[in-house]
Amino acid sequence: MFETSTAGSLPKPVWLATPKMLWAPWAASGDALIQAKRDATLLTLKEQEDIGLDIVSDGEQSRQHFVHGFLEGVEGIDFGKRVKMGIRNNRYEAEVPSVTGPLKRKGSVHKTEAVLARAHTKHKLKFTLPGPMTICDTVADSHYGSRAAMAMRFAEILNEEARELEAAGCDVIQFDEPAFNVYMSEVVEWGVAALNRAVEGLRCKTAVHICYGYGIKANIDWKAGLGSEWRQYEEIFPALAKSRIGQVSLECIHSRVPANLMAMLKGKDVLVGAIDVASEQVETPEEVAAVLKSALRYVPAEKLLPCTNCGMAPLDRHLAQEKMRALVKGAALLRAELGGKA
Ligand code: ZN
Image 1 (cartoon, rainbow, N blue to C red):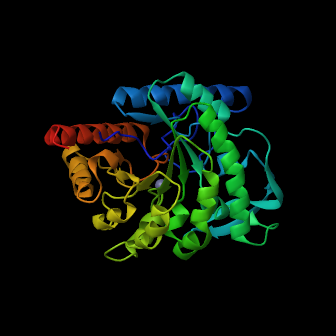
Image 2: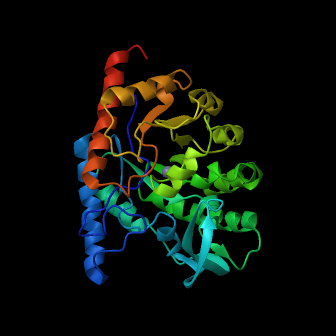
């Protein structure tokens, strides 16, 4: 009961990449970089196990960014043709690569990392991929002419990749869709359909992570203007409840998302964000347990999985470890409190 995990990305050691930033430059190159990524992957697995997380991940140690790390393995994208573009509905600007031709996987993108991680942990293993809609919001299109069409092509490619990750022994494959909280009507029109295509034929657990973004300034400013109640989830949950996705990962602690919206996800596992990735304050186990308890009113215990609000890549590494520890302790506290009653 209450199996713990993180939303995905974790801070990288200083010898792998510049700490505390997104799109951090690598600290090594060539063969040294390949070795450093590998070493960091093993280290993060060991750290997560020692902390006591039930479901571990590679912490995205081999990717500079969760979207572009995948796109580097896809043909039809020109990284030389960078376009400055407002992303997440112009919340912030990013230099994004361009889609210039038909999209096709060059080969396996993340299989090596999954195989490596699988060989070095007996814990359940989660692997994250960017979702089709979020990918489309993080590239410039000069080929497809329609986001929906481009998303469906990305979904096919992601499905090929996900099938390989499943065969490599991943227990959970999660698609990250922060864009779902931004383009709610498109989610209903084609976002969930693309997600369904991405998980087609998978037998392992499948998840979608939908948050209000990393704890960076642009996101914190955006959240400040979202009003006293954040009801974006309400618009997309009915479509998600009917989808093929098994698990939904949400931002909860310190958000203004009404807990009762989780009742709309009946039948799904809910990964309840009980760690704030935008705060330098380490949660107490009691705070974590309180968030989980409020979710328990709407999600059955066997379907509730304690998690972080988002990835922790831009955080101080030590701070992220303390936060993971708080998550594990908070889940244990609630388990002890319920003492077999649930
Ligand atoms: Zn997130």
